[in-house]
Length: 92
Image: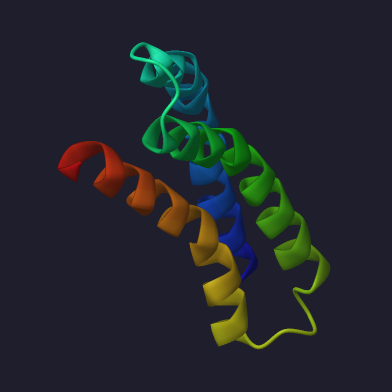
């Protein structure tokens, strides 16, 4: 389980580099003025690193006490964040 956590959290750490560029580009959501869609995108982008850090800290803190399936669900949260952002960008 530790190897899985190391690989998954390394993947999430690597994804923080493109997150910075997406953060800078997401400001363009307000080019046509403020909208609910633009505010939603900004919130989604700004909160992603917080979700990664919180999930990583809790997964390492509760490594011995949580069941493996619960640990899997906890570590999938940032991936669902990435997936929801991708669906939002590519389909809307």
